[in-house]
Length: 551
Image 1 (cartoon, helix red, strand yellow):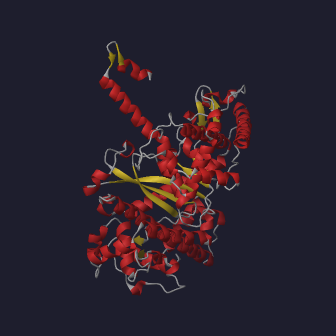
Image 2 (tube, helix red, strand yellow):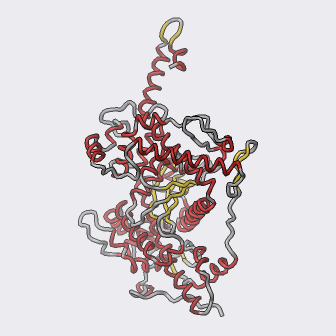
Image 3 (tube, one colour):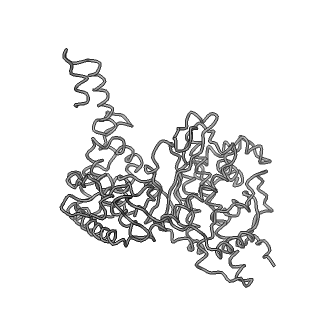
């Protein structure tokens, strides 16, 4: 390569030191891109070994049984997408030239300008929010978890590792889950919970607490929320958003954290959470703060165990790359990130004579490389099939493809596919205020959920102090499970509160119910002794009395 040639090749012949550096540097890059692999290695094994076997893929394709949401014929796919792209480009170009883009303008001098959305809550909705909040019963977090378990039986999913039996002591199980959720830990929880010892909690955690038991219990709560009629005021369960929340690592865990300037100079971990439009957090994953959020977007959508059927997903700027755009489309999800500095995000158009003068400030000088997509079409389909079938996780493949895309043909081809989808999305964004509102509302739900999570995860200054990654995962899973329980409990009692207001003669506008949120925690006591009094239980089919209606 020219950049090495002048160092390696000298007047006296080959410089051995630079030759070795060149070989090692290029080997490192080839390993990262998957062009070179190491037999027997986990991290650097042959890229092909991660995927569905070639023979199985060929059989599925021949039988038209690929689990993908697009036409699997390359010519047909490209014809349809490029035809749509050119039609959308022409439409938006015409609207921009006539200054007809809704709440947006494109000029040569200043580029794209979009009017910010009005986020104000109507006064009538705020009054209803205040009224319902006053009616919600006050209770301890222990009482809330017992009541939600009475409704759903989520604790039955924490089965014994060997015997698959349910936990004999349900109170002890809930205590262990709560210790994870509030970041107290088993030692301190044993001190805060009379009659409980560290040995008992540790034994129960060892035999009953696992990633899969947390996952199935969470799915139980998410499904219960999905079945709540009142949750329909917030959405139908087909859209979702995801966001990363940073937690500092301290004490013994400090060395396991990573530093991201976005979150300051302290090391930390990110809990990456997916939340449905009905406020149910259906996936949580512990990730390094140095890895881009977009790596984990698909994991939460594909590998949750709930009944949700997500069709449209929202993220912020950190949640998108061209690779994610491409895979999301192939796997049947509509991807809608809120892109910061959208005017600086370029549109990609096919090679040709078409000129889109009004869009010129936003059009990239690079053209779509359709030839690359054609050359690697079957590899793209095989990758997407492998991810969909769970042969390999989306996050692992996205890390591989994103590590050095310039040298990997598949990575470049998928990037070009993603550029088509990203351009189509931006053109939709420019035309639709409704799309902007949906994305904005979806992301606001995730940010509000993060505030609840921060309030629940309050012990140890909200820092992660567990050294083992397994214990850190349990913290994230426990936190997600308890926030899901709070969301479900609040949803049930918000419905009862609105019914009580109507029964008292208060007129409520159904169109304003969407502004209520099940993420409040002012009425929940998260601190103090964690007692599980049987006298505090609510009988089957019964509910706690609401607080008195104002005169």
